[in-house]
Image (tube, rainbow over all chains, first blue to last red; front, top):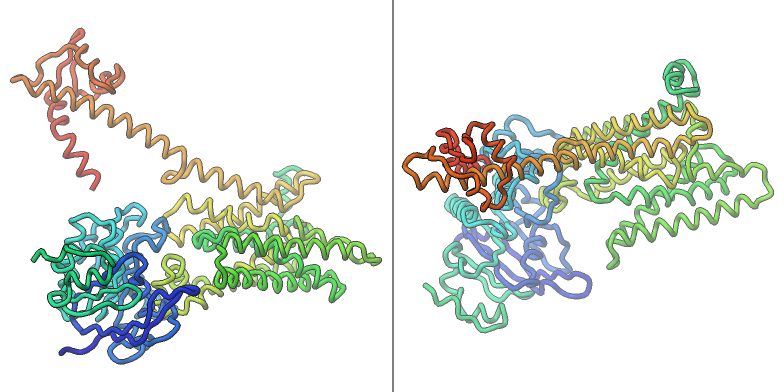
Length: 244
Length: 375
C-alpha cells in the first residue's frame, strides 16, 4: 500500500442548519486519479473546498501527507469551477496563469522572468501558448478551462484538486485535459476530480469516491464502481455500469 | 470669469489653486480605488459608506461643539467604518444579499444622520449653521491643510497599492483561489475596503454625502471601456477622476451659483458617456459599425458563394449567366453585385454576369479562409 496523500477525519460541514457533508472519513492514496461522483447537492465541491480550507467545517480534520493543510500548501493546487470567476476581468491569459506562481512567491514579491517562463511552459502544455496575450473574455469556455488548468500546473504541486474541469468543454478539450491528468498521475501526482459524467469514470479514472452528504464508498474503480454503489448514491436503480 | 480666465488664474490665485488641487487629488484617489469597487461588483458600497458617514459628522459636532473639518471627518470615518462592517456582517450572518444589506444600512444611517442634523439646527446656538454643507459638499471651503491631508492619504494609498498589487489583483479575480495559495484574504479585503472608506470620507467636504459614490464609480466605469489591463484601468480611472475634478472646478468657478460637487460629478458622467459610445473595442458606436460591416461582408460572401455554386456546373468558370438568376437568391442586392465588380470578382456584360478567375478562387476558398481567421 502506498502512502496516504490526503486524509479526512470526521468531516462535517453545514450551510446554516442543513448539513452538506456528514461525518466524512476518507483516505486518498498517493498517485491515484480519483473521481468524486454524486448527485447535485451531494457536497462534492464542498468536500474539496473544505479540504482546501476555503470553507470552515463544523467538525473534523484534514491532513496532507500527515500534516495540517496550512503547513502543506505548496504541495496542493486547485482548479476551481470555471463559472466561479468573472471572465470579463481586465487581464490576459498569461497573467491568469502567472497567478499560479503567487503562492510560492508569498507576500509582496513580484513575479519575475523565472515565473514568467514557468507560466509560458504551462500554457504550452495545455496547448494555449498562442493565446497568451488574449483578453480572457475572448477565450472560449474550453480555452478558459485550459487556462485554469495551466494556472494549477504552474504551482508544480503534488496533489491537484479540480472542480468539474470537464463542465461545458468540447470533446477535443476533454481529451486534452484527461491526457494531462493521466500524465500527472504517471509523474506520481495525486489528482482528485469532481466529475459528473458517470459513463467516462471507468475510462478516465482508477479510483473513485461515491458521495451523497455521507461517503458511500471509496476505492479502486474496478472494485467498487458497480450498480450497487451507484444505486446507493443516486437513490435510483442503476444499470449503466455493465459496459466493460 | 470665463474658463480661459480661470486657467490663467489657477496658478496664481491661492484659493483657486487650493480648490483645484484638492478636487484633482480627490478625483485621482477615488478613481483609483473605484476601479477595485467596480471590479468587485461592490459599486453601491461607496454610496452606502458615504451615507453612513453622515451621523458621524453630526455626532462629532454634538460631542466637541466645534466645526473643525478634521474633527468632523474623523467622526465620519468612524461611522463610515461602522456602517461598512455592519454591511459585511449582515451579508455573512443572515440570508440577506449584499444589495439588501447596502440599502438597509444606507437608509438607516442616512435617516439617523438627517434626524441629528435637524436636531442640531433647532439648538439655540449660532455655531450650528453650515453642517448641511456635507450633504452636497462645498469645495470653496477647502483650505491648504485639507489638500495636504488628501495628498498624504493618496500617497499612502498609492504606496499600499503598489506594495500589494499582486495580492489585490489575485483577490479581485479569484478570492477562493487566493485563499488556497495561503494569502490572508480578510486582511487584503479589509485593506481595500478601509482605503475606500478613507477616500470617501475625504471627499465629503468637497462633493458631499449624496453624490460621493459617483466619484468612485464614474471614472472607473469610463476607464474600463478603454483597456483590458488592470494597471491601465486603475491609471486611467485616476486620470479621468483628476480631470473631472479640474474641469468641474473650472466650470463652476467660471459661472456664478454653480456648486462644484455636482459639476464635478457631471463632468465625470460625460467621461462615462463618451467612453460608452466611442471606446474602440467596447464602445456602442464601433460595436454597431463592426456589426454592420460584418453583415455586409457576409452578404457579399454568400452572394459570391451562390455564384460559385452556379459557375461550378460549367466547364468554363467565366460562363456568363443572367442577373435575373440571382434574384432567386435571398440576400442579393444590386449593391452587393456592384461591390463584387469593384473587387474584380465578377464581370458584367449587359444583363449577364460571369465570375472572373480571381473571383472563382476567392469563392472556393471562402469557407476555409473564414474558419482559419476565426482561430
